[in-house]
Length: 173
Image (tube, rainbow, N blue to C red; front, top):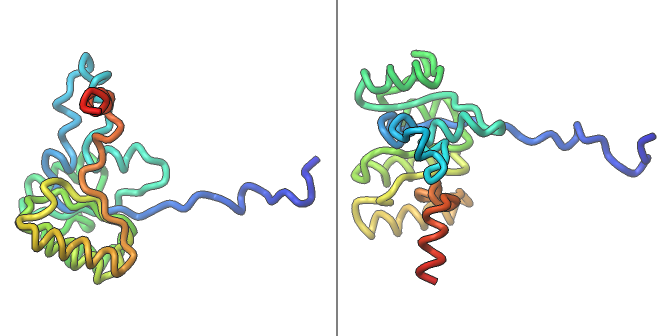
């Protein structure tokens, strides 16, 4: 019998987050295809942004953006993103889809503009690739804007749990 002071677990259902990705090529969605099964112990999957979202039960990858239609179409097929949720303009994706979490897996030259726009338009968490930006001034601006708005910003954190990187850190320590 349930104790009266213990709340039912359904009241604590974990929130599911809407995610979107800008930059649909290698690290955005396809790098996992490059790692042969024999190396997956050293490089545990998933590795790409999209594959991580796919593997996480608390995220739904709902949209993508890329300037290259052919790459975005292949990404859409692989991650089941319908054509109407594939955007050439990242601003349109953010405005229409309202993601909770946004991945920016683009070239660094565009990244500051993308992240600042995302923060200004309601995105609450951003996972960006490295290098963080094209300049230190842009990096400082991105950090300040995120901090001022309470947006979580993570830069290339996927390797943090990789056994090889942990071993290298231990050796350095």
